[in-house]
Image 1 (cartoon, rainbow, N blue to C red):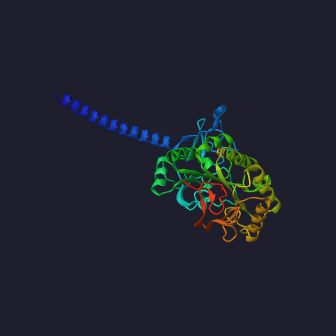
Image 2: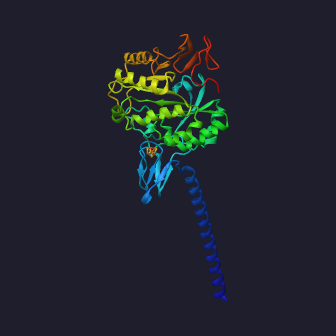
Image 3: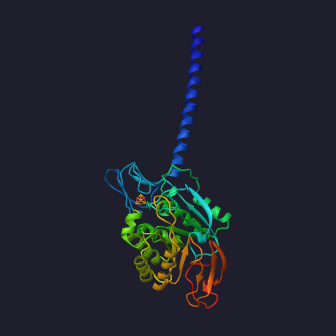
Length: 377
Ligand code: SF4
């Protein structure tokens, strides 16, 4: 009788322990499932890559064409080979979201005077030693605090803040291609325009896929020699020129920025050659922004660009025949849009502020000259 009682109490004890273990097991499974679903949300399989032998992959997104073995990340630090598949490590994880004036991109012929919701993730496919945003562009995922923001939430943010456009900017948006693409498609579905601020280092196939969902771009032409690109940027010139031509073919409206760095890309002959190329291969109507360099990142021993150099570049561009030439990061040289036909001031600016706008339905209000760009949402 006593034995039977002991057996029964032992059985109860074992059952209790088993129940406890079962609960712990279930809890562990739930935690594991949650972790897996979260990882799946953060990791997004890349759109443009090729699987190679022995679990290697080649990223086909930009001209670096990184070949990666399992566990390796690309030059941009944000695309990784995981077990023979390439993933974006930054999908839905912006490091920066701000509302900027569109003039800051800079875009002077695109919805002048409007606000643009601007965002970036970490990472860049170039490593320019003069980078102005190196604290985020040269950072790896995990090194810096990021937010979790879905494409739908980005659209909501733009709408809540009355932004008629969304810009992919600050770092190189090409490296967060899948996130940019999904936002751009959703933006168009919701009547919001999109802006791509880029170094132009992207392969043709991804650019052509993206193009129908991009309304405007500012494309950096950082210099006009391979020597400059190789010395200062880790990239090369030819792919950027190809991007400019492809963007034109695809009908993306764009403006060009050239950051003038003393003793690096400020040779007048090089500026002449760049302007001639723009006119011959793109057209005289594409706006060109010369921008003043300030010492930053690894180019701290170089002085800021003298005003004289910027004035010279401006004169060269006009002499060569470019119709819209601006000088940024410095006031008083060329901030306003002047009608190339009647020479009247069409858009008057002060820094990023719009003071007067005399473009009506894309035409000069004084003489009717067609002005390139997008002037209504
Ligand atoms: S996007 Fe990144 S991983 Fe892909 S080729 Fe360019 S640098 Fe390499």
